[in-house]
Length: 390
Image (tube, rainbow, N blue to C red; front, side, top):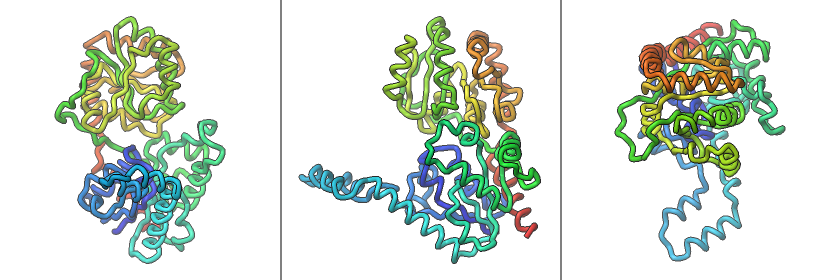
């Protein structure tokens, strides 16, 4: 069986859970019994760039003139760069490269031999090209449907997702929660949906990065988008940070000016720090944290939960959406909009070593239930079922 993946998410993400998922499917395909190709010409995805194949074949998703000028040593480099910026804006180059990716994918879909197409995000650009050939769609969450107020009026993700869900031969949901949401919000027949859990790629044991960390801290990783509930978390634990001389360490994007102002308004600006984190640094942060705190209002799955388990970090989670499904009895939970619930739960974990040891032990056992090989094998089962139904 030959499966084709497209460029979409590898074009969007340098790092991220969705691109990690498709990369792991591609990487494990031969192991579980199918052949997989990724069609992408221009991209920036760090996981693909770890491989010899894509280091050679994938061009930078960037203005080629800017790349050339950055690598060239000429006396008038700055002047040339200003002229280039005046003539062709960088955004125009990105639009051109996106179009080249899309056209290459359409060419592949039209002329290549494949059995299943599996798009990596929700752009329906390919529908008229398939001409009856099946495609499988993975739905990762229903954030756009639950929190439409957080997205621009021009955002078409929800509309496109719905259209593809109707057209797909089968749908993969990454959790039982996501399946329930699909049946409730989009009214998709549950018989059309297969649940295939994700897994973890992070492993402890990397060489310790050269960074100075606080002696005691709790960890928050990834995006701080509104539904991630970061601001309410900070407001809730401000008193704990002061009382226990505790720090909150965050990965993800650098703090914005507005975030710094928020920290100062609570008097916790000296208790919160940002650390830029690749996989090695992220594993290091988990390993040395008192606990990992995940206050999100909604998750389609929650890979950071498995990362914490794998690295021996006690997990303190919202009792919402898929987090109970993923964390099981290996985490402790709080009401994400209840300040006192957050405070009491975090205080209990950081103040009792026996609680922390128990959570660490449970986490090591829990993470064994999830693997990318299992994800790939179950996905292969969905592909086979799709072809058998033709």
